[in-house]
Image 1 (cartoon, helix red, strand yellow):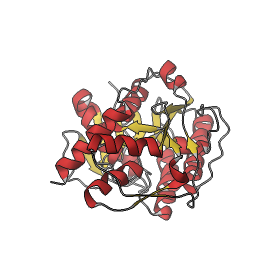
Image 2: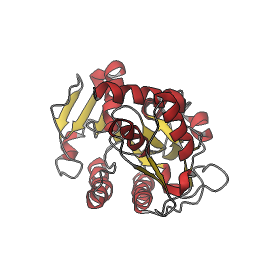
Image 3: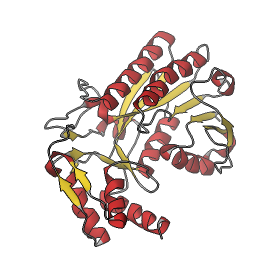
Image 4: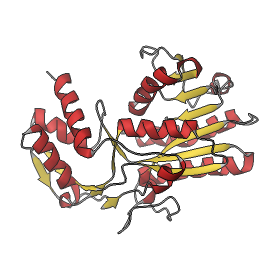
Length: 293
């Protein structure tokens, strides 16, 4: 059985992924974390993707899942983890045979989707720093895969939400229920996004782990559906039976629509999102209510 190494077990995706791996592959999974206080039965080591000791810690890995590099509000740190961290990881993998690397990216690399949801072969034109950095990161992995004959899968995730998510529009809306804070909504509420519940994101990652694909592959892992901000607001108000305190504006610049086509992932990874937006929001609202009593 392949040895799996998960880099970034402390984050939103990481915690959910290692919970699932504990049940299916606990004897062959090792997790890199920032804090060893994280409770898991999996083997773990405290590390950093920027450290030169990374090579020693991943030397026994057959499949490496890179979850590091999620945005935490500091752009310099975001760039460092994505770009320098990726160079360090890939240099640490040089010379390893039959290794597979899975990179977590974002559908934000597409920029505006226009009238049709974005497929993996669409020209990439992100308008803002988050998508640009993720695009540059992907190019680093693509070049490495082609010049070193390494198997790499890039997963472009949709807008993640779910219990314990620390940021994003949905969390801000849910927090406003309790704290009655004003929430600013861009594009007059017409902004459209493809929202992905965390359990479905983990399903997509597990399908990539188990796949036999070779060389360099890219997949959209998302719901395949788009919702306006106004639709999300209405669902939250209906589920919670509470009125949100909103400021609708068109002043803040942002892409009007970022949505992904998931037909390739459905065909080659057998990926199929199972949680509807209403189910996901209901579970998220319930979790937030339980944790704020």
